[in-house]
Amino acid sequence: FFGATDPAIQATGVPGPVQPDKKDWAPRFGFAYSPTGYKWAGKGNTVVRGGFGIAYDVLFYNILAAENGNYPRVLSQMMTPPPNNAFPTLAPATAVLGPFNPMSGFVNSPANTVHPTTNFWTLSIQREFGSNYILEVGYSGNRSYHGIAQGQGNPPILTPAQAATVVATGDPMQIPTAQARRLNPNWGSRTLLMSTAKAAYEAGYVKFDRRMTKSLMIGANYTYSGTWSNNDEPLGVTDITPSTPQTPEDYLNVRKEWSRSIYDRPHRVAVTYLYQVPWFSSSWASGWPAKIMSGWQVAGYTDAQSGQPFTITTGVDSAGIGNATPARPNYNPSGVFQKNAVFTSSGPVQQNFGGGLRTFYIPVDGTGIVTAPLGSNGILASSMSGGGNLGRNTFRGPNFQQWDFSLMKKVTLRENMQFELRSDFGNLWNHRNFPNPVATMSSTTFGQNTASLIGDGVRTILVSGKLIF
Image (cartoon, rainbow, N blue to C red; front, side):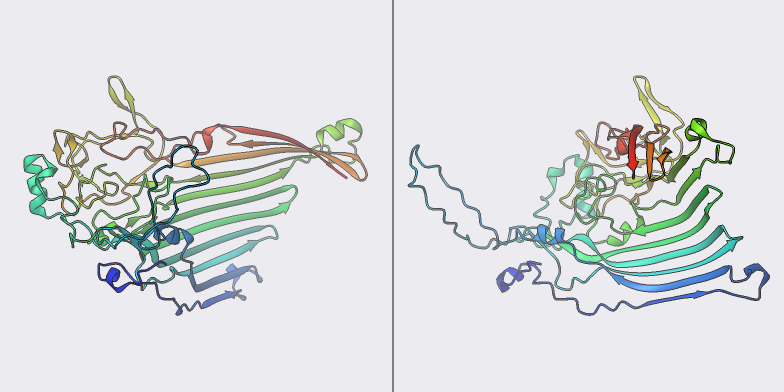
C-alpha cells in the first residue's frame, strides 16, 4: 500500500508498508432442527434454523489509487515549449526528483491495517401450512469491525480559547492558520485510511410465501431493523457524502461519530405476485374467443422502505480541522424546525409529504433547531472547538416506494409455436421518489430539495413480443 520505506520520510509521521494480514480465521456453524411430537409443529412441517459465522472482506483497489501519489513515486516536470518547427529536435524529457519536503501531503494506510471483518448470526422458525403456504419469522444480526475509515495523523487543533477569540472578534484570521495549528506544524497533512470503522445491524423479519397453485403465487416480506456505524464511506462518493461526510468532525474524538448509518432503513416491505388468469380455460371454450380471452398473466413487484438518514453540516470549517465537509452545528431543542416546507415568495409553508423529510425550514440566524456562531459573512470558520454537538445522521429523508407491473398474453399459433405479447410498467403509479434535501447551512438552498429524482421519477412502459417455436 505504498508505505514509506525511507527512514527519513517515516520520521515525519508517514507510515511504513502495510504488513500482510495472515491471521484471518473464518469458522461457520449452522443447524436445522425439525421438531416432531408437538401439535404446533405439525408432522415435520416446522424447521428451526440458526447459525453463526465470521467473514472477511478485501482491501479494495480505491485505497491503492488514493495512496499511489506519495513522494517519491510521482515525478512532475515543467517543460518550456520549443520554438516553432523545432521537430525533431525537442527538449529532453528528463524528470529530476527534488528533495523531500516534510510539508508535502501524504495519504497512507497504517502498517497494522487488517482485513474488514464481520461476525454474523441468524435464527429463524419456518412453518408450512397445508402444502402451499410457508410462514417464516426470523432474526438476523451482525457486528463489523476493521472497516476502512479516513483519519488524520497530523490534524490541526482548535483550542477553546482560539475558538472564543474567533467568536469575540468575528474574524477567523485572528488565530494561527490551520497549518500552524497542526500537531506538528513542520509537517504537512498525513491522511490515513485506517481499518478502524465499526458497524452493527439488528433485524427481525416476517416472510410469507404461497407456492404457485391454482394459477396464483404470492411472496411478501417485512423487515424491522437498525443499522449503526461510525463511518459509512472513507472516500468521496457522490450518492453518499452529501448526506454523511467521509471524515469525522473531530479527528481526536471519533466516538461521537457513532450513530444510525446512512444505510439504515428501519422499515422495509417487499411484495411479489404472479397470477395466471383462468378465463376460458374450461373445455367448452373454443375458437378465437378462447384464444383472445385465455393465456393472460399479471405479475408485479412492490418495494417500500424508510428514507435515508442525513447529516446537517455548517458548510464551513467551523470545527477548525482544515476541512469544511464534516463540521456539524449545535443542537437547539427549542429552536424553529418546520417539516416538509414549501418555499414560497411569502415564506415557507408546511405541507404533508408523507414519511421523512422531503424539505424542511430551519432559520440560520441562531433561532433554528441547529445553530452555529455567526459573523458578518455568515457562519464563522474555526469557531467551534471539537465541532458541534449535533449527532451524525440525525435526520431522515423521504421514504421510497416502487411499483412495477407486467401484463402478458400468450397465444398458441400451432402445436409447437406460441406468440407472447408483454407490457412492462416501471413505476406504475408515476410516483416521485425524492433524494435527501440540501443539508448544508451555508447553502442558499438549505432545506430545499434540488437534486434529481431517484430513478428519474417517471413511469416507463416497455411493450415486447416474442415468438416461441
